[in-house]
Image 1 (tube, rainbow over the protein chains, first blue to last red):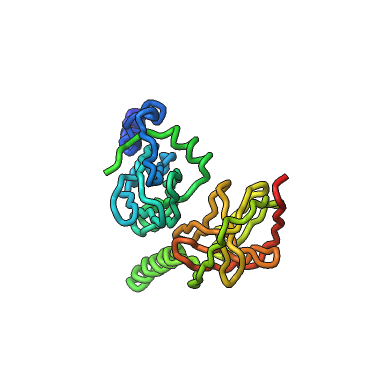
Image 2 (spheres, each protein chain N blue to C red; image 1 turned 60 degrees about the vertical axis):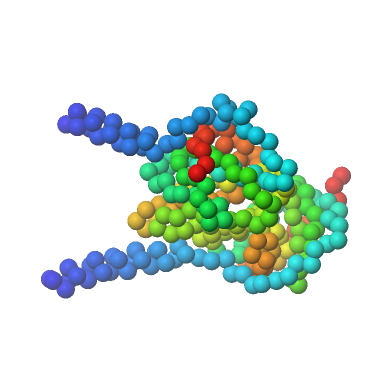
Length: 144
Length: 132
């Protein structure tokens, strides 16, 4: 009985860990991140929590897939100034609309809420101070 | 017995689907036109915290001490923006928003991407003052 519990706990941990990001930590690669191009703005997309780690929907910027919502992972995307939307889809789609100015950096946090059959991953615009702090605790997972 | 066996899952499914449908809530919006201010307005500092509800269950908080500028006007009031905090309105989806002030009250929000206005459930009094 004790052995079965240990095996169950090990397998559960393994499944959960597989859902987490495995790239370089922000601190390791921050110096290699280029400056924001003069005619663009930058969007950081990150998922700081391991809650619902097995749910990893694609993340789309203006309808184009730019990455995956992996726990403890982050990506960044440079985009033209103007109106944009970020969208993720599990059993429903969740959308964030926002403005991006030239030279501006915006932080979009991906969180999980309860769903009917599967959790919903929703994008949320956060204050710069929050975004800077939380991205620093994530790992780079690369864009699509 | 068979009827009961059939009714129970149907009742459970209806209850669950009712919960699911309630999850899809939209921000009520009406189209509007922003008349941009020629120059960005003089900076003003918000003197009180304000919590503004649009009736979706996700109130928007405006923080005391943040610096704002008027960027234009819509029929419902003056539109302000800040770099000091993120302002969004939320239902099932989230929209960046800019507070609309009329007569010293936040009466709603201008959604710059959608170019629409969403009305506050009730006006919320705020006070701006020039920075010291």
